[in-house]
Image (cartoon, rainbow, N blue to C red):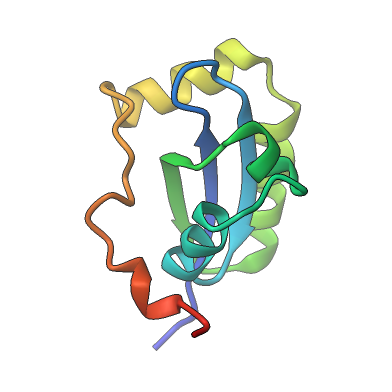
Length: 103
């Protein structure tokens, strides 16, 4: 079985501040983001809504894609999200993130 890597975009519910990242475990990473506190960029701006992700089989491709998207204008990011997720739904809502609790 080959390893999977993800390039993803999070946003705030209303103000469209974006966070673009890479991970090898999308569910675990979303748990970390949703649990983020005020002292982090994601926590400070409440950027916890997963609106876009894509899967890659090579970490180098995932990182290259992350860097490319980070350089894009806000309008380009919005278009990318809208193409795949026209209603800007939180794609992680149905995931059981509780299994990543450290307690």
